[in-house]
Image 1 (cartoon, helix red, strand yellow):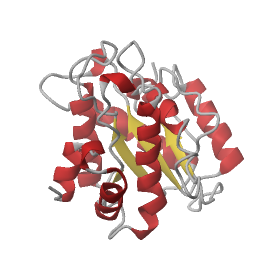
Image 2 (cartoon, rainbow, N blue to C red):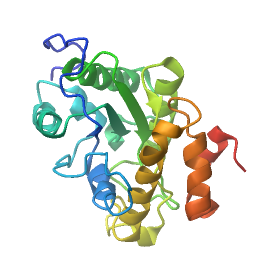
Image 3 (cartoon, rainbow, N blue to C red):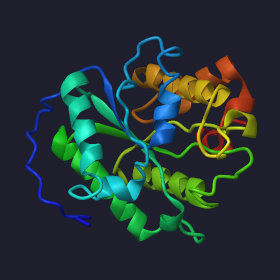
Amino acid sequence: MAFFGSTVTAAATVNPYESSRIGVVGCSNTADILSRYAGSSAVDNVWFDNINYGGGHLAVWADIEGQGASYWTSFQDNLETYGASSVWVQVCIRDNWTSASGMTEEQQALLTTVVDHIRELTSPTIDIYVSPLNSYLIHSCDLIGPYSVDNSIELADWAASTGLGLRGPDIGPLTPQMLAPDGCHPRGEGRTLGGQQIAAFFDQVDTASAPGSPDAYLLWLQGELGNRWLCSSTLRAAGLP
């Protein structure tokens, strides 16, 4: 596997794919919620077509020249088709890459590799929003194990605190009724909720109180959907009750 240090072509200082669209890196859960994004957004500025990222957990994306090659090909195809002014990364972590003791240096290195490669393909100064995997009201997804969501929340917060990226939106919490029988993937109302949350954040991102700040997004979403739909971790980060 070619992790951390794959040879790539240096990017120009100007993004050759600049557009009003927001690129996407993620997994099947990301694709599931984006399937309902277009019906919720007023601007449709996030990629939502051709998001073929099934199995795209963080370690696969970081394996740029190995297992991740097909994912980056899909990303590049969408980049050339739609362009991107910024990129949203949803951190999906499989159980065998998680840690019961919290975020690891290995996970940080994986995320750094992914973010660096996005900037190599686009521009060194492109804004990259980092979000955790969607949260669950009752966790029962064996594929990601009991620590993936918490690890991904820490990674998203770490990326924002270190300047690696900007803090992206939180998705969920999803109830059991919002999930497929595997207990992992959003379906029905789960996809609708996720699509609404993505639209609420990225429709508002240009008018947020500061770059990457969730304050304006959360105040808007609180009025639209009510507190019951908001992730408690994001509410705490924004200082909302």
